[in-house]
Length: 101
Image (cartoon, rainbow, N blue to C red; front, top):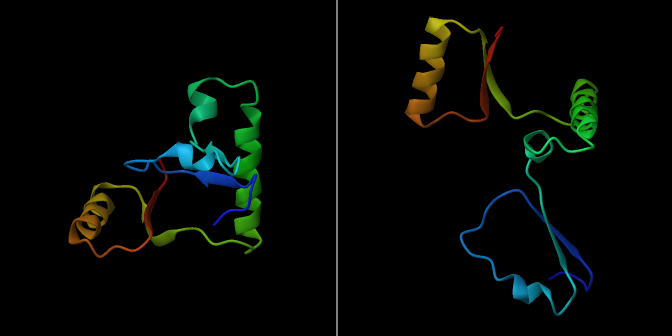
């Protein structure tokens, strides 16, 4: 489905992947792992901060939406129990947020 010299970006780990199929069209495969820079103390570590700040700006400007489904407020034992119950119930949609660490 990709044109020759196309690019594929992945954030997940497929159970199997035959990369030899990419060769005919000279396709490139790019894996993204959000912790790679910090895990390996990359020379461009500051880029992670820049990317996160840019995403925060886009959220603040309502250009993109977060995946927050529910904000339960301050983190405490009661709210942690509520969050855990939501997750155990299997009907939670989006991220559950607890604030104030």
